[in-house]
Image (cartoon, rainbow, N blue to C red; front, side, top):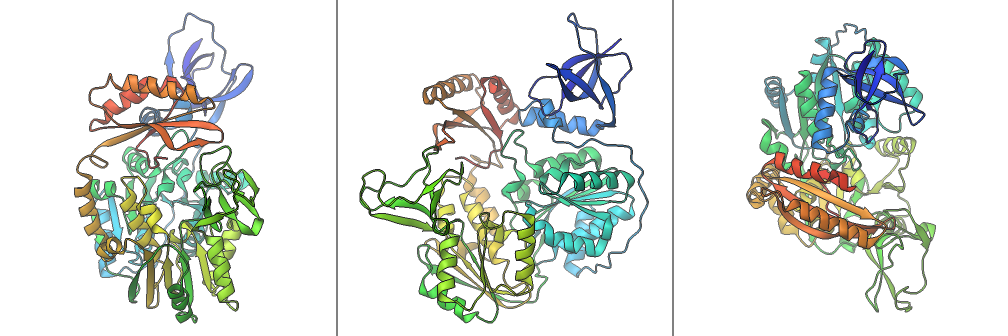
Length: 608
């Protein structure tokens, strides 16, 4: 009889020991039983017969996990502080593969500057393509994918959100045809099974998708491209709290694949740590004029007049807030209408005649009086997309004006429809949130109106300047793709945006000095999130975490206490933020508290 350590997929337990009459190999996927329920597990290694009785392996599956996958899963388990089963549960196992040799000609012709960037990337195992919006990064990606295919290798192109996939799919299909498959959470189970079979047979050589595509069984992987690498969507907000951008670099190294990170506004960490090629020259021969309006966030006459000037072309209006208004506050007592289950103000949705919490989705009728003081002076604050849409439709009744946010775009079909109609110029004005900034090509846009960035710039977050400026430049980059254009920014901090509008690299250099070795990329951060239905119990758990932290001399507790959002879904929340120059010491601390039933987030991007 043989005995093996087996990790159960998507299970928070340590590996368990099972016996098997048949010899098994490391990476084999097996069926086992736990508490009379069938589970899928991965063989880690052979071990000695234990002193206790063991259940027998029920069956052996044809799929397997490669040596490299097991190594990456061990890293995820250690670095992101989760069970090995949770880490392995991210991956799709390999099957029997029969790769076909294919030769293609993309017919992509690179400009002189693009060729320099391509040559630079070719000479590096991992690099950052720091290319201005419209500088032609996609053409370079296509050339690199072509090289991988012609070398009988596969390629992976990661995008931050489903929203980017329709246009990228169109461009890739035009060049690579059926060799390309798209992968994201909205793809049906049946379609996913078809894609996996096509990967095994070699009929698919290129996967374009969101962060989950990183864990697909691509045989003979030759290239990983992480487009829009600055985007926070690459970070998972549930266990394992991995960052796909960072894991792409590790997987590329383990599997001998070239890794390219690309962005017009790269993260400070990527700029500091990777060989970088700066692609400045615009791919589109058009001019852009910036107008800075010193004003609070509102649709005023200057904005309306500017939209009127561009009546013969298309306009996009950006603001970071959904609904009609972010909050309802009382002009008498100053209180806001809060969610009863979360300590946040509820958002006003006039079209549905309700208030909704954007954290737990609780909704209620709009109150006629202030719930706190019973007076009726309720005032709407922080204008949102629905309110802007309403104002613009009243002012421009002949124009086709649509909304582009998560309330409106709740399916891939709707996303495809609205992008298609906008590019076919059936929509005149598009009003939206961050979705507008996500790398879409809007060739008819000659005016970008950008509102509400001050709320982001003034957040208590060391990355506030980086996030706000990046978003500003990303949205500004949607205009003038093929025609001269204008960008109108409404802000009370115009000097900041004006200073760096022409040179994001200058901002990155300035920001490196500002961080002063107190924040990433000079140190590592770790956030401990405590959440419990009992407030006192949550507070006691925080005290215990603080007590443990005192035993680690190289770790500094930056702050601890109630979270900015004190309650979500009826659970009280506390945070502790720690930093250290030595990441190993930070991880030792993290692993020492994981039994306390706390959430651990290494390299956190959110501090709420």
